[in-house]
Structure formats: C-alpha cells, structure tokens
Length: 263
Image: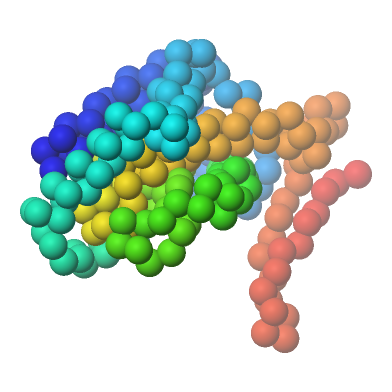
C-alpha cells in the first residue's frame, strides 16, 4: 500500500505544480448579492502547454495497461497489498470526499471569497466538465470490459469516482488557484485520497484510477477552454453593455429557470 500512496502523491504534486502556472489578468470581483447576473466576465483559459502533460500521461498509462504486462502486473501487486492490509471494505467515504472541493468552492463564494467566475458561470462550467467526462469515459467502461478487483462487474476502466474527484480538484484550482496554491493542493489531495480509497476498497485497479484522473483533469480544462467561445456571444452585448439574467422559478411543484436578455 505504500507504493500506491507514494505514486498518487507524485500524481497530485505533478498536477498541482502544473496548475500553479495558470495565470489570469486580474482576479474577478463580483457582488455576492448579484449571483445570478451574467456580466461579461468569462475569460479564455490562460495556461501553459506543460499543464496538459500530466493528464495526457495518466490516460496513456491507463491505456497501456491493456497491453503492457509490467503495468498490469503492478495492478495485481498493488491489489494484493491492499487486500493484505485490509481484506474487507472500508466505509465508502470516497463517495462523499470526491465532492469536497466543489463544496468548498461554493462555500467560499457565499462567504465572500470570490473566484474567477460568477456563480452561474462556474456552475455551467462545472456541468460541462462533468458532461465531457461522462461522455469520454462511460462508453469506455462498457467497451473496455475490465473486471473489477472485487468481481462485482466489468465496468472497472476507467474509475468514475477518481475522474469525478479530479474534475472537482481541477475546478477548484481553476477558480481559486490565482488566490493561493493551497486551494489547488487541497483539491488534489482530496482527489488523490478518493482514488486511493477506490483501490483500497477493491473497487478499481491502480491503472483505472490513474486513467480516471487524467480524464477528469482534461475534461475540466476542456470546459474552461470551450465555454468562453460561445458564452460571451450568447450572454453579453459588447456595444450596449446589456446584461443577461437567469432567475430560478417555482410553479405548481416544478422548479425551473427564467432566461432574460435585454434587446
């Protein structure tokens, strides 16, 4: 088990070090009482190409586990160590830990510590990140046909919990990394712990969680890169400087949103 902890900490270190290099022009300042307003605040992802190396390596490593015997043998070795350390299942705390960075992002926002984007913007980006991750990975779960270590099903590759945890970690790093690198460190620590617990509870092989981490990070980076391309045109009129507002509604037991744009 020492092997998996050391390797996962190395993964977290690589990802955080790459993420710290992300820069934006200025920190976004918004009024917390105006959470539903959509001013022109979304900026293109400012990052270095080096930050894409770790997730690409993670995905490649996971893919190679199907053909490279040494990588697959490491999966078996780590799983044997995990079973030796703890033959039964631990309480599945990773079911909740994977969402800790997301909860903290919104908690900080409501406490008045503003991140890169407004409430609505970051929520849409988060939804896009999870959607991209789902489209990229859940088809692979069926097509890869890999049996889980505990034999429960054949949807082992890649790890969904690990991927979602790293989506959340990258989300926190994107929103608050400019304020302090400790936000990114916290997010990636939670994600790494989630991944370790998936192996320790015999739900995934080591290569599953490494690939899941890569998909999670890249999915969030893709959402931050894509969203400004259409969002600023849809929600903002540069000439008239008019705003768009999305308001929550409730009628006859149905919850929804009202989209309002000044013409």
